[in-house]
Image (cartoon, rainbow, N blue to C red; front, side, top):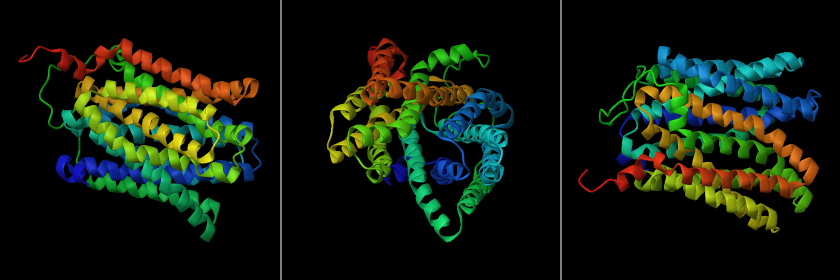
Length: 407
């Protein structure tokens, strides 16, 4: 853990990584059980999908107002409140599924709590990370999330084996509640607009910067996160179906496919973060996007199961690494006083991708087959790569490289 011992000196950053790891465990537990529980309650697949849309709507609807909440309450208080809200929603969910309306309402609150947890954690990270190591910090953050999401389903399986499915939801809620207590007691207080740790007092942009101005400055980050949300939500639902229908892969074999995606991200995200801090975040995102584009096309032509698993791992290494690097990019573009609004917009675009991806991908899959769906996902990443070329000057690292020596 040279990165932790040698480069990350602020214990609050380590605490935030522990927080998001525990959040990942709680969320991973709930996600692993959600569709199974709803299926047992007699929900049709269309209804399960609709509840997922309500969750995404909760993220979209609450992401943008959360910037104002953070400015008023601080990121720490917003994070603590969101952890407690998530604890309530996940623990109560099995008790409200007798009514679709109540289940949808709880899923909206679940989305709101998730937005608060992500935006709160990311705002604190960007405030406290040194300017020249933001990608290293966000990469470690992404790795912590991945570990949590990998541990969560295994813990769910254990709790269900010794108790019940409903008990697993309750355990997830208790983990979130305990995490809220930990953050409330151990995380140092922050203040709205706190300066990033180690950053020089730069020429701050006016505090009254408009939302449109912020979106324009971080447009590459927003596009990258939108594309990732769109891709992730689509692939989780439809890649297993495509593999079983077109490649002859069994249901049991597809279950471990997501593990290769997470493994790829875990093994490469720190390398990508280090490269981004050294050579430019947007350049790194462009390279990762191009690699991801080729990998998605590989899903169409590869037939061997283990080659497909390798391709999924490369997709995790490339596409999943774009999200933390894009977070780091906006961290060096925005003034620290704008981190709350920037993170709210950034997560709103991610949720919008989650909301739009499955219905569009599903329609293409149903009408034109799995390859057409994959080609359109590849086209999305191609558009992202072109976008990063057109707006390459948005990366401060490019401006530094272009500046005459001595300036």
